[in-house]
Image 1 (spheres, rainbow, N blue to C red):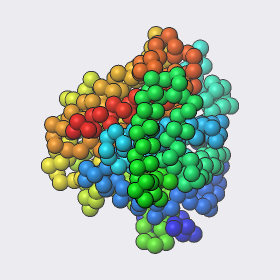
Image 2: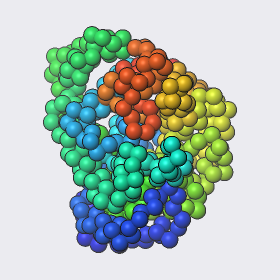
Image 3: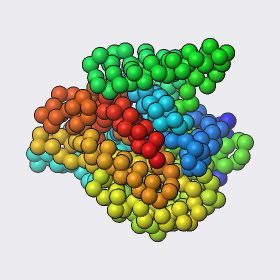
Length: 449
């Protein structure tokens, strides 16, 4: 347990370094007061749980398990409802069941959840009809509406992020341990959806097989506790360093620093400067950490990141989340994998097939083609097969709702459908049907390895 009363124990070396993508808070005194208040709040997760995830990711790094990481592009304060959270969790549980059963591999389940309220932006401001305002940086910073009042960064929102994350985690814990995640519920997760979706029908056939296997085990006199609950971890991008620093505490067992805002945090493509505050922050906390690597990443950068973030070469400590784009993954990824493997480091390799495949449709909607998402995952598997390394997992932006944000999929969405239920505040997400399609296809690819 990690509730040390002194949040300033340990070295906080990142505070003196330049930090990219931070909001321009207009009232510094209000920010200081908010940070001081956050420092007094209880942890959202415990250090021991972070250690547990690091050990599970160690199994992924060694090729013994697969990581499924998914959730919203950016969470919203007005979507912290039981229904939204349950739908997201249900989708991840269904994907996990498909991957475990059809891929015959243990699946580590990590949500992009309970903290994913902040977004990096390519430009600090946005102009519409001659009016220039600060860009929307996620509900943790400002509002989505294009008005001066909504777009003003407000540190009070950091406290709302904490409360929303706490509510979300509370519900996730209840769902995952209180019977909802029991594998005997595999049919119940699907009832609303099986009749009208090809992937729902395919999932239902798989659920029947799982059912038969469970009945067989029961008849043999075995009913393992592991089937009644599910291990589910929370992760988000560690973007706002004022918030992450306030949530960083000294673990009373080990004296080491842990970021108790989530079990795993990652550093984005736009904030992974080797001499910047974000990488320094990640190097100081004991959580498992991830780094996003885009197509411009050089092998030298990857090796320097390993030296900085995983000096002890501990399997499960460092996850490389590659986001290359379908068109470049087969060209750019092999050298990275080859050089990192030759260095002796055992990192978790994960494919983010979303961020490199975004384009603007004629309607003005930002979207992704399901076929591109799938092709990047295929390329990722091909590269690892060629290198003899383990394709460790996928990192996906998804929702449990029937949105129309990405085109394609078995239950096909066309460009002309995008406007029907385009609900994201930021990037386009896979809906439930597309997420299940992806899980089946990934399970097949995994088996072919």
